[in-house]
Image (cartoon, rainbow, N blue to C red; front, side):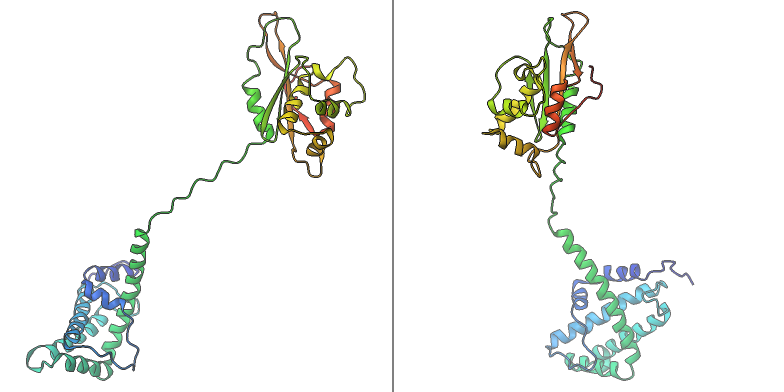
Length: 309
């Protein structure tokens, strides 16, 4: 005889469920009566419907078992089949033919049979019902979950870029690009701090008093150098003015406090250089000795990779 090779009876139990009516499935969804509990009072119509449901479930399972399909790992198909056929015969005996009883009497007779001569058959059906109910409960839960609206979660916000990364991108847009023509020394600087870029040029314009004090009080000497002629100082001034620091002390605390409000600042300066005055481009350069002093004192790092002296 052919034997279904599927080792898990769950697939065969699902096949049984696919052949059941809605009434039969609703019966499986109800809690199974506890052994020895008093039977629930029902009408004649309800008693007859219950017996029909029991017979229908038994017959549907028997159809699978006749194909030698396991429904219980602990019982061979032929063994369970004989239990179910015995139950079905008893239901037909009390509901059909010359031994037919009134609906409620037939229900009571089946109950007495399940406690006596048919106890083994009834227990086998009870075990099958428990297995079918468990599979059906899983199917119901899956169907309910599929009906729920899918919750769409917003993608996580991108990680904020570091000051060094922002400066790198700024330089990529500038280094090697065309610079102003002429023979005058032209320098510009980009300071990235607090996630923002601040720019300055060596144009000789005034800087705020806060910036002037912040820089000059961090120097040991001012040899051939003025703050207003320094692109790095003008970039720092753009930051100081933007943050509206009222005093040098407030600006210094923001840059060097414990912890600083604006840590990990990065700066880079560029010269306009070229073989001829009308063919100049921006090239990264090293900070001068004076700038190295105040940058270090304020905790600002200079990007000197690939810089020219």
